[in-house]
Image 1 (tube, rainbow, N blue to C red):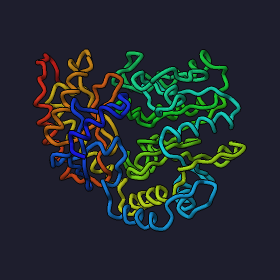
Image 2 (cartoon, rainbow, N blue to C red; image 1 turned 180 degrees about the horizontal axis):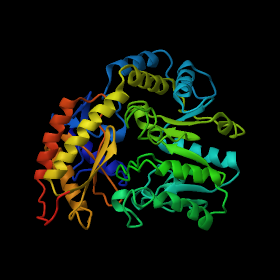
Image 3 (spheres, rainbow, N blue to C red; image 1 turned 90 degrees about the vertical axis):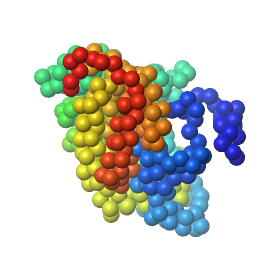
Image 4 (cartoon, rainbow, N blue to C red; image 1 turned 45 degrees about the vertical axis):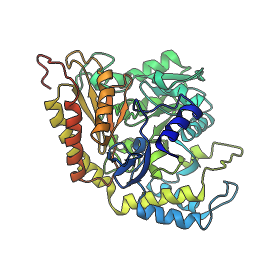
Length: 437
């Protein structure tokens, strides 16, 4: 198909709810490592990685060699048969799980992984009540949209029963108007009152992203998750860490994002970067919790030999090449560069994140923190013109999200920062008195 034929078919034959970042959709044709190319032959430095999914570079040679060998050996059987790729991946996850005896269930996406986790929590506790966070994103099914705390991603009439939303630790826009650390982490301690006033007092659990992805890479202070996990368990619930975006070393040094705060979760969900772009969903839990899902279940495509081979290869590669360390080192280098841009561009109100999961929040006025939504849209277009790919998020759509492959280099970061600087310079910034950081 030609570029025009692709765009026409996209317009006429695909649900219009499937949105694109740009006024004219960007037609991508091929990719390798940290670069992608469009239908016109333009090369882009990819610093979004297919929405935090390309963890070891596009079309990674080592991963794809193992995938190709598996395609030619055994391409598909459902979970009613046992296979070596599924068993090997489950064993690997059990080895790196935050405790002994963990068991996994494989599906096809983060949405499915979160559905399975919520179902299992309800079966384990006997309670239907789930706590989620404001600004969160957990998937596109009816249930996962109901636990999502962002109206943009809640389509149709969601299943609201038994779901309440707690305050997240969004220090830049504190819901209580306080300042960390003198706030005593009020957003966390408020969870107990939420449980007492909006639930039966006995909950199934809480699902939370260690760093909120679609919410704009909102990163909590170190006290937040230890406090909320303790409160949830006090009222009979389990703590589910939604690691669809934060797992596999992305936050630096650790396999799981929640480990950065010293919290041992009861259940973890993941997807995206686990298989470097192959469709996968992972729900992994303590053995006693996994055993509470009584009866029988299957997944036609979950546990697929090819996908599981890809995931095992990705995890092995991250381990062998110490990419979690690289995420910490190069992530800190990227962070320093973004903070330097914040000193230069008044449009940048906040820089946050961890490892190779960094964000800049754009504001029209640093004092008032007025979301620069339209400016962020213009930044996306300018970034495209300067041949870099970045993501967008936040409740107000004013956050630029950066999540390059974990094997990115400092040289790649240098090139990216030059192009991001140029993109920011193309946006008209109002002269704001007293706009220093």
